[in-house]
Image 1 (cartoon, rainbow, N blue to C red):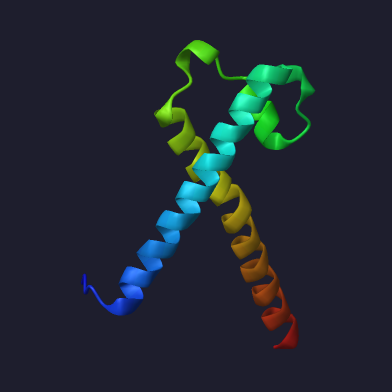
Image 2: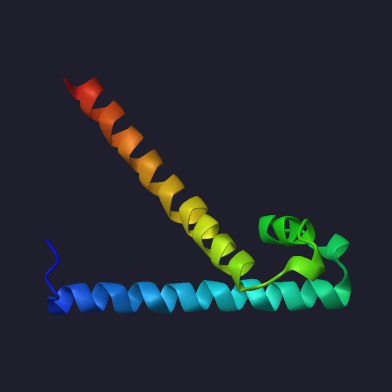
Length: 93
């Protein structure tokens, strides 16, 4: 059930700040790549942005990239730690 507790508000406030930060980084990187050329980028984000047609770049792309980057950064860490925890637990049995 949904309860608007202070912890809930803090959680959503932090998520909003994270989303704003990542979207700002994506937009800044897009602007830099448009000035320097897409072939200059060396990061994963540069490679992804290099595959987007400039005529179709917009807020929908930024939102999608933000969500994918969060999954890549945070979900990978979580699944690895869960797998290691399970493996160690099984070994200790």
